[in-house]
Image 1 (cartoon, rainbow, N blue to C red):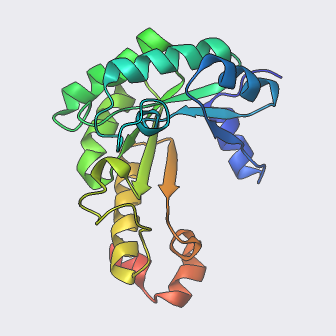
Image 2: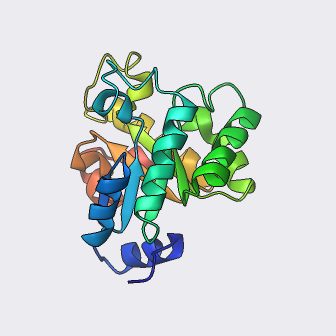
Amino acid sequence: MPKKMIHDLWRMKREGEKITWLTAYDYPTAQFAEAAGMDMILVGDSLGMCVYGYPSTVPVTMDQCIVHCEAVTRGAPGTFVVGDMPFMSYQSSVEKGIESAGRFLKEAAVDAVKLEGGRRVADVVRGIVDAGLVVVGHIGLTPQSSGQLGGHKAQGRTAESARTLIEDALALEEAWIQILLLEAVPPEATADRERYDRAVPGLHAEVR
């Protein structure tokens, strides 16, 4: 099968076709994923816990992420690979985010980068997109800032929390995000507007 690119994934979404996505950190796992026909692979900063035994994703460095992304792209050259941008590789400035994202493309040949946050990183997202990269957003439970969330807890379980998620999603959409990952978010908060308005009348209109 030819390698799927971002426009193929958008088409699959429009047509209701399931998209398979697996996390991998090394060459042999990437080989197995490609042989199994996975559409996408995420090289997550969760490698901090899964590979290095760190207590969280926070200690993970850019160099560690790049090394693991290189291994995965070599193991799965025909699969869409997303590199996860670690803590403090983009939070300090737009320029820092563009530089870090560029390393993923130049040194590891990934197809996209992923970063956490909504409105507060929208300018960084726009800068990276303008630099020519595909960007995956990540809202809901964002492990790099889990301390602010009170730990690893589901998000969007109240009207106020859901409103925050929607505002973040809209900000990322306006920044030209290409894919959006929602982690630990109840299905009601991700429902289409008509169904959600029945549960929380006027919420979307208020956000807009």
